[in-house]
Length: 229
Image (cartoon, rainbow, N blue to C red; front, side, top):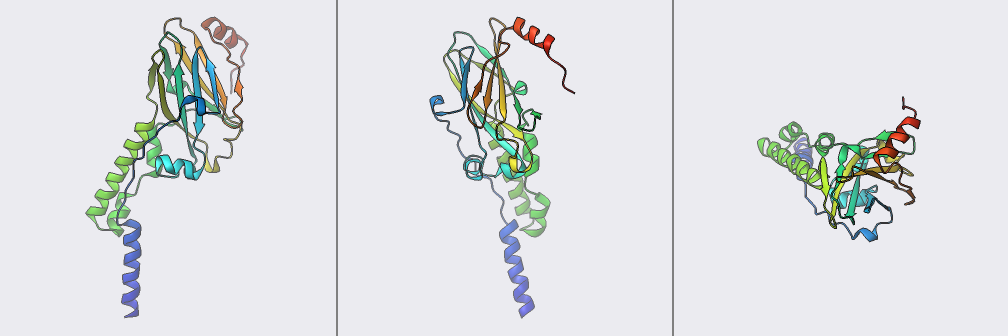
């Protein structure tokens, strides 16, 4: 009887752990751009950044504690005050962490692979095919959620309009190098060809002056720069 009791108890625990997988999609509703402490205006475009770097913040918006896997989502809110269309290219955004590493955004679908539910484990230890389908559905909801919040590959900022979206960076366990990181966000004026780059410190909110705002200035800067190895 005792052995049967233990077996039943073990089954209940396994059913609790693996019986049903789910992912709740939560809305991302930014505040007005004026509310963000970390922001800068370059080329008549105001760019604000807000990093989700605590367990509560990230779970309240993304359901899963992405920080535990070494990821930090950064919300960008942008307001184009100019009369021109401005182009934002996600892959040009860079995060210089406090250790000197230059990081590029990680696509949401790649990040999902680190967090998706193990479908076979749910099938074996849960309710068979039903648990497998449950885990599969949760993984799809996770991908839909995080991809839906993500900035697109390219985005045109229409004059006098605001846009927002999230970029994901992988800093590693504990996010130890996030403090005093600098986020570089270039925007291109589609009429003049000028490029303006906002440089935002995620800790402290101190903007770095715009550098290389025109194609000519950019060329001069490249002549003086030393290639990174």
